[in-house]
Structure formats: C-alpha cells, structure tokens
Length: 337
Image (cartoon, rainbow, N blue to C red; front, side, top):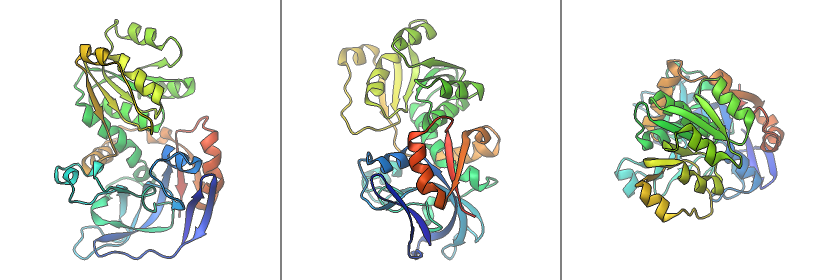
C-alpha cells in the first residue's frame, strides 16, 4: 500500500509499505481523509519532541471499516472516526478515566505510524461510528475534539467572558465549543486575516490584535477586570507566559498547547488572583462524541474551516509548502478515493 512518510526532518516521501495485519481486537480501516495539522508541520521541521524517524504521519483521519472483530457493532463499509490516542488501559490515568493522558500513550502518527496511508489497523476502542458525518467531517473531528476537551476542562459557565489566544485550527475549535457552552468569546492573534475569519464566521464575537498594546486592549475589553476564562492555543512560550496577566481575579487559564521549554510566571500575580491553572491534553471519547453531535446538528461551520485539499502523492510537496505558506490556510485534507 502507499503511505506518506517523513523519513527525517525536511524529507517527505511516498513509499510502498506492507499491508497491515489486523490484530484480534482491532479494526481494519480503509483510510479516506486525513487532516494536516501543526503537529505534522512540526514533524517535517524536526521540532516535535516525542518523535522517532522515519514515521508515517497523520493523526486526524476518517475511513470506512474493512474488517472488524467478531461481535463488534461496526460493520464493513461503515464510515468511522479514529481517536488516535492509543492508551494502555492499566495505568493510573487510564484507571481514573483519563486515557487521553495515559502514562504509556501511543499517538498514531507520532509514537507509532499514523493514518496517511491507504489502510491501517486500529484498536476497536479507538474507532467510533461517524453517524451521519461525511468522511470530510469525520477527519475534522480530532482537531475539534482537542478544543472541546479544553473547554470541558475549563468548566466554563453561561455568560462567562472567555479569551482564546491563537486563531489556528485548535484555537478556533476551543472558541467554537466555548461559545456552544455559553461563553462570550474574544479571540486574540497576531494575524489580522485569521482574526477576521473567526469573527466573520461567528466563531468569536470580537477580536484583539496581539501587538505591543495587547495588555491595554484586554483591559479595555473587560473594564480592567480580565477574562473569566483564558485558553492559550499558540504553542508559543512568550504567549503562554503572557496569558497569565489576562486572567480575571478568580479566573481560570487553560494551556491547550505544549512547548518543550519551561513556563514561568509571577507567583504574586498568580496568588493575588487566586486563579486556577489547568493543562489540557488530547481528547477522550466523550469529546469526540460531543464534536460528532455538534457537526451533525449544524453547529460547526466546517464548510468554511476546510480550505485546502491534496492527494497522497501531492502531500509530499504540499505539506512542506503549507508549513511555510499559511496564508488562507485553516484546515487541509488529504483525499484517498
């Protein structure tokens, strides 16, 4: 079968790989759509902290069931969504219902080969019925589930003022689900085009440009009180550290993205606010199901979020190009079949 492989930083190739073998408790999936995200760009650029090369990339994908275990409700030909976070099932996180932060987690496309290929065998517990979703919509569930999980972690309530920092796909997902939870959403980014996209598509009520006057702009937008909820989805150390000052007294900061460096903050500023700091990692089945329902009920403008398309063979040149040329890019899909 054909697969897109990042052989080493800066080198993408299409390779013939052996057909996968289905394990006893696995589902053989014929891949139909794969989303390209920041993680894939970081892998290509050699910036991912957890990856060993070569690697078949792709952790956002949908497909159709080819073969399922005996007794499984999944049927051949059924459209499915893949949760790429393969958990061990036995560690303290798994025992406490948090497989998204499993101590031995194996993320498809990162720790193990992913879905940018024609077929893949996936543990049955990581394969979800897509319901009425198309394969395009199914492949978009994972990046939205990251945002949905962050919002669930925040425990946002109706009417709370929320600031989402970062207007990339993950930030847009967080803004969408914070809005669906009843939040009053402001989005902050350096890119005026992305800010305009978020507001014009009803994802955020208003925007703030991340320039040298951002502190004053946040103060003006909140009557000098700060935001009840702040989500940082930038993957930028300076932004993550600066996010602390945007939080209201008694408010919450959720760090959605990850960086390899240490994050520092002022303890007096943290304590005087009695603020809550939360990490948010990956997503759970409940988050995927929440996303599937939101898409089915027409509450996610996916027709505007999917902006670019390519094929398996085209991905080896398009992915490196889009890593540099992001103008107009929100979500790109690789199409198979």
